[in-house]
Length: 280
Image 1 (cartoon, rainbow, N blue to C red):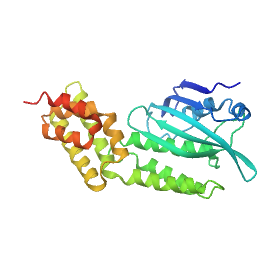
Image 2 (spheres, rainbow, N blue to C red):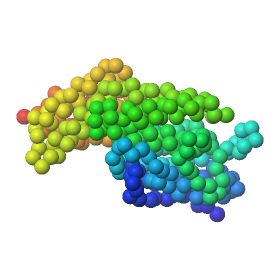
Image 3 (cartoon, one colour):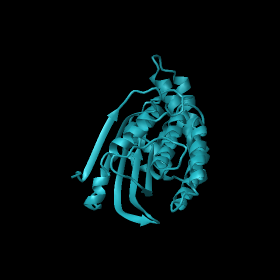
Image 4 (tube, rainbow, N blue to C red):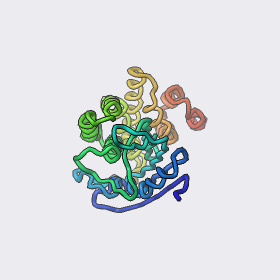
């Protein structure tokens, strides 16, 4: 009998090591016993999908961490097939979080998951979120560095929109990836933040480069808020790096900007306040 909470972790070092530390937990409390039995091996299959798939080789090893939680709802019949329904949470343990409210897929005991050009309700969904995660990570290395992977996710969603019974969900994902890809100022802010992080963390910190990067970061953030307000995607990034942002602004004497971060990210007010105590 499967346990009600099933977990697996795997660390791997592969040629295309984009994901090296992946966990997958299944919550099956709402499933019948027969449905639970059919999920045997799913955690391992999901982990292997991310760690073993032949991701693109034009990028270097990103060594990303990833936690996945799949919360199952009662299964349903669509057409002649029995589908699992689930909500899925993907997080890189830092500043990328994606929540799927309406996953539907077929799965059988011991079945594997492979990266393929053929549509598969679960494998294609995992591939789509892999591209979002890689795109978000590459945006931290260079200005708009993840554009090619947002394009991959968009193309995948468009091709999947015609899937029987599942097209509406994929239509929503087309809109989702467009929102991420076109939020150019937030994507630029991420790259400026990491440029500052690298300048401060160098063997001999480059304070001029740090101040330039943080100035650009703050200006890009101001444009994000002016254009679209403070949305979840922005809050996730700011909260994930609140202490580093506060330290770098304090190191460069950008006290007004540090004060302004309280307005942009009130969830981290305590952190910003602690650093503001050090202003002259």
